[in-house]
Image (cartoon, rainbow, N blue to C red; front, side):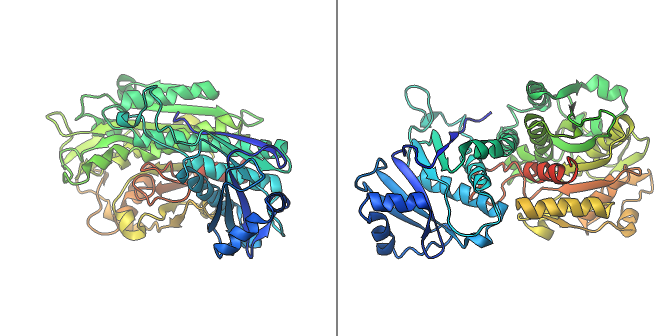
Length: 505
């Protein structure tokens, strides 16, 4: 896992690191500890705030260098805006923005005095935990291949933050509250690392071995090799893989955390195309390098399963990912080929670049037969059409069940990982009817994301199901206060909250 700074919790009165941050609300509302520091410095804090015309607006700053009479040689006053307006996702975002401000000043260690004054719906220890969560997400780096940035000892960037101390009223309670978020942050980091890895390093076999490492946190992991996949007659998945010299894998990760093992699991299915050339229907060369990220759905599932296990979630869950490489070669699937899926349905492959839905169809059928899940959620960087519709701010949500859709929308509103519900309609089903097989993998020019969802739905029986098309959010998404990375790890926070809010109570 990518190294991140150590985050620790300490009492408000503990010694400060040389780089320290205090919070200020609207109209420079300072906490008790910040007022003490102002007194200790002979009023230097408030003088600096006044000189900078600082009003406490969200993410605004005022800075003191070498303030007298205190241990900190650099003191940053950070605005949080109107306290009563701040929700959970706002505190997380502020934690990321704070971490960014600290990192920009090249401190190796820093103190954050997580104390606010005024009325808030969020408890003090939870504020500290959420700020730490945002900082953990922001301080991610993927620099393992940047050898020129390493010093003589082999360490990367000597000015990078190594330790963040969160000072708060009750460090023990804050640390306990952070444990859940830390597990989620670790899951996000795993997902980001997977998406950021180049495809020559992370093929189907290597990805499967990364999934196997989750045994270390208590997951039961089974890896199906190409021969086993063939024995299961997953003809649609193998049709995607057959053009590559690198063999397919399916990874099955189980977490048995519910009090009763008889409780049916939640099933999370991920598209894991480790590189997508488009196959015989080859993509344009411009931007093809980004297709190393076409396994963002599988990466999310691995990160989520890690988070559930690390925090010992009170739920039974299974994550299944199909790992393939879509390459053109003499053995590749041709446009016009007809393949037989695990379900027995035949599929006419009109375009080999509409490949992720083939992988998902077989996995969904397998999950229903072998695990009888309470619900299924699949995730895939599936279509460019969803980005035409929603840009890179929202993932597309399709569901055959209103309750499931609303539960995901609720989790989206809490976490800020945004989804927008898209339509499923019988008209889209007709668009994937084939003259030569049961269905075809392409519905034509219009409503590409909707016809892709309709294709996947044809493999769903009577199980509540949702499909999340995260083509715009899993890779090369807009940078934010909590995501500095090309691979965003999108979906781990959303689905962890979905599980925690709706299926652990």
